[in-house]
Length: 319
Ligand code: FO1
Image (cartoon, rainbow, N blue to C red; front, side, top):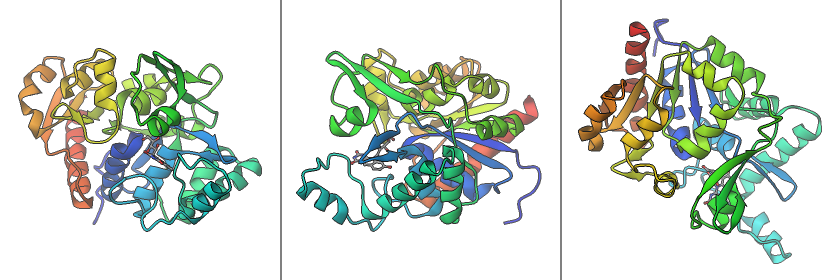
């Protein structure tokens, strides 16, 4: 469709499956000059000698339309011959890397070994998938989310996949944050942005690491920013956000998320099931959009993205 220039230059902050879904919807609405996606890398880890970047790959696969339709992460039509043989040879297959997924990981490893930074590697991989919207790692330096539990600390994927989020979360920290710099391309994208959309991702482990990098929170705060609630009807549609909020003593509701982002955002998108919370969210000084935020298919992603864009345009006009 003809894209009118009235569309805002947007940065989306994303991590996890919910974030990738809205990023995909926004990519249908905006051309690459109007949309960049800054992605969490706190879930990344070394495994089988490969750098696993789950949130970068989930955004890439969704924008390329090759994502696993139900899981949200990993590839569609995947096979696991390599993993099965590795298991026969003694490897513990707790982290499921499919054959197609491993191809991307081998190329990433090759490019990193050649000295490319993660931003350049991600751009080249996106190009090879025919994805034109900039997918920008939050940092080219390693930042690793560590989950604190009563039994001690767990690396993120150990907590999320191997332990299936069962341990009680008592806190988290970002290993490497002291020396990590935000990726220059991510900073540049925020500098150019007229507005920011915080996608329906886990506020703590998906959006938190992005905002923790020096200078990124301030740049988001300086622009009209909208957050889409990852909590619908008191539940997260995917992942441990609701469980984490309960364990951290935060009210497990969309209102709890709005409070978490208060001071950083100007608009909040609630699911219609949480319409009764709109007055309390508005009382935080936020503009509120109530709509159907459950993205069951591509059409729903594109519809929600269109409504979020219209909401953003209103906030830009008011700012
Ligand atoms: N999540 C799982 O629950 N089990 C897995 O075996 C698994 C493997 C996996 C492989 C590649 C990848 O990019 C993501 C993978 N994920 C898996 C999802 C991943 O742990 C999460 O998507 C993010 O870390 C949090 O959103």
